[in-house]
Length: 134
Length: 258
Image (cartoon, rainbow over all chains, first blue to last red; front, side, top):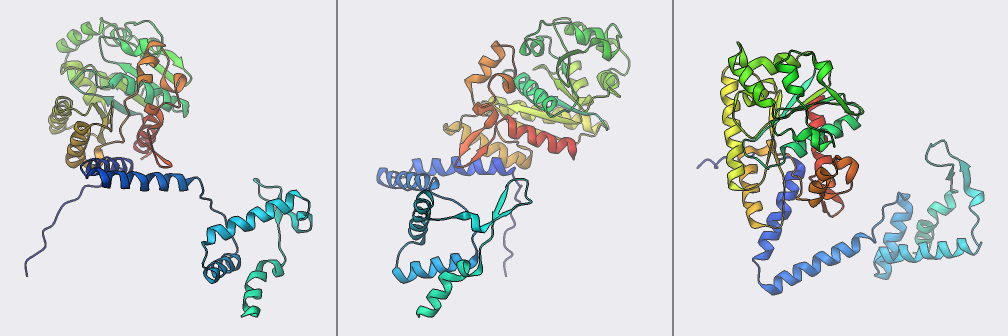
């Protein structure tokens, strides 16, 4: 069996590698037909625009799963359900319908004064309702 | 702690040696590293870059045998300068006539007490240049990305190889692309070429930036005049920054701290 040709690779500084990759990609794109260039440019703009809509929070797995299951049942994007839930919460909070005081406990973290400690029925409500409903 | 000596060298002129030495020296000093800058170029531009007059610091050190502590000028917190001027030409003549002439600068900088010494070399290949390369632990080779400047990189590396054959051990070298314009095809061709040949020895590039020229005119460093400029912060690529003197300073610290 013929031995595979061995190619020596020299590791690059990660920033140099990223920059080089980006420049090569742009160079390749510049040689594509106009229609394809425009398509790629639109896709890039779309990704760029979505970047500002991204957020990362730590959630209890039961909440995340509850949201995912509901989104699948309703055949909706989970992000839109999360948006609705958060918008409703912010509105309720500003109208004094939600009192965080009952969940607040002092935090030992240097970054925060308080933690919210939730009773189990809140955390597991979404899953339980789904389970009992089905 | 041992002193780490960096030489900024390229026989080609106008590639950003002095700006790079000034910016990185001030950057190190701001990180509380005791730093010495030495001007080995008779043009004496290091002093001007800090808004000072040229002066014969190197001449006094080498030709008049004055101690290092008396010829240095404290120019910023943690940052001292051995300035140069046209009298540096006399230093070359003096060194040429001396015994053990290749190691004169190395001997003078031994036990200097600084954490880091940066040597700003002249665009030439003379006895002072050789002295600088022999004194150095690490050589930083700033280069524009055009064929002629890249040839200058090869010349420096050839000289370093000859010095190594005579027993000097370098800890390493880095190639620093400067005046980097990522929109041109020629930049990409030369960038591909030097990364193919020199691999991980290529440091992240410094973008072309008119702020650098303004900075020199005001006698301030980039950290003072324009710390948010692209030459400091690099190119914005999505959420990350690529290149720029801040990232280069990080690479330098990795070298210093091992």
